[in-house]
Amino acid sequence: MFGFGKDDKKTVALPKRPALDAARGPKEDNGIVGNTATGLVERLLDMGIDGRRPFDSAAAVARQAAAKHPRPDDAVDEIVKDATILAAAGGFLTSMGGFITMPVSLPINVVEFYLVATRMVAAIAKVRGYDIDQPEIRSAVLLTLVGADADDLLAKAGVVVPAGRLANLAAQRLPGPVLMVVNKAVGFRILSTAGKGVLSRFGRGVPIAGGVVGAGLDTYLLRRIADNARREFPIVR
Image (cartoon, rainbow, N blue to C red; front, side):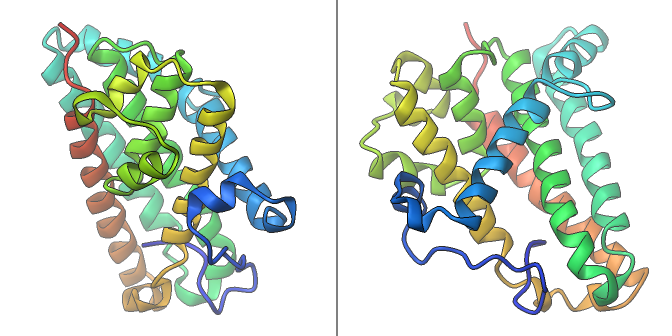
């Protein structure tokens, strides 16, 4: 997917250790990469969930969808559809220049994509009855972004999720430091994933064609995250 390519002048040297170990420290392993992971997670929580003008909050998106569609599943479909359009547009525009603009556009696309994805997941959780102001639910939203890797991160943190649903983190009442480490590990995992295989997206070397490829891949990835969110946040009864 999009990310920091090995030929990109802005490439960040990603840690060789597992994401959770890197998130725990020590300080020398948390230099530029650690600050980048922390900054990414803070932005996803603050802007992706809480919103910053002109980017509406997840709660606002959920309210708008629920007002149009009384059935939660229909509201979720609306949320996913709107997020997919945004992701496709972002993938297209940041891929238009091909390899020439890659050093500038790819980091922007990483942040843009995951902001849209975070808001989408949080809005789905809100529509289905979860308190997205609760720290555990916010961590569950972040973990949803990394799919199957979430189980690995939680297991290494010694966290057991009842019934295997990330939403059930709410019942854990985990200490703040544990949630901070898990959240930062998500940031490391996102950066690691974003840094793999960028230049293999051959279409991005050609303007216009690169935009089509970028839009298609970002749409595919967002829909995978949406499917994951539907599973992880069942309707609260």
